[in-house]
Image (cartoon, rainbow, N blue to C red; front, side):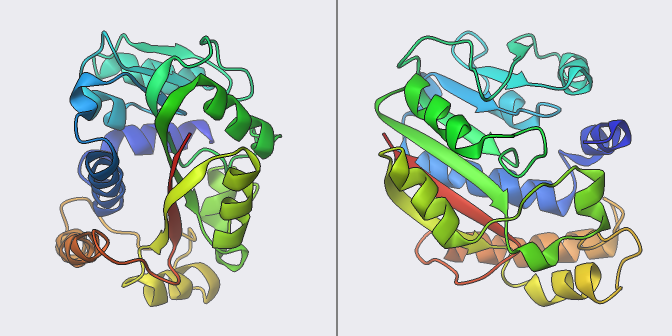
Length: 241
């Protein structure tokens, strides 16, 4: 990402409706697949400014890596010392090191030159039966100015993620689009000129809009516990080694 984007992420990651929904969905999926995750060893690949890693807790068990020094610096500001610089193409951990790997908003990035190789590396460091959680942006037609700012190289469709995981011998447990209820607004913001910055919804973290969008997303998250959606702004995959 551009350096300014890390500063923005650090400022809003624990309060903005989008991040609240993303993190809620990840931990909802983690709870469903690995109920005793608090006692497991988990790696956050591409941990960004560290909000997920902070929520995972257990710094003696859990670790985060990111390629950007700026991200590591912001993690330190959160008080996180269980984070290091690292490349998803060559993870500096032995085989079968972790019970779960979280890879949220990483595989889309220009710095990931070999997506298949990155997934292969995550498979390698997972223990047998280990869980992989992936979140990626969906649908190439939603590419916008915001994608340029965060250095998006690719947006995915469900079939692409399915083939990617199956090729590395993962068993897919869950594959669903999400941010579905707000999808029409996202299309307007990103493709019809509704947002100068190309972001889905340019709202202040304390605004009425932020609270409204979060309420909408809480309903969607409840539904995602039992159903999957056929379209959305992003795509969640849960797989097992």
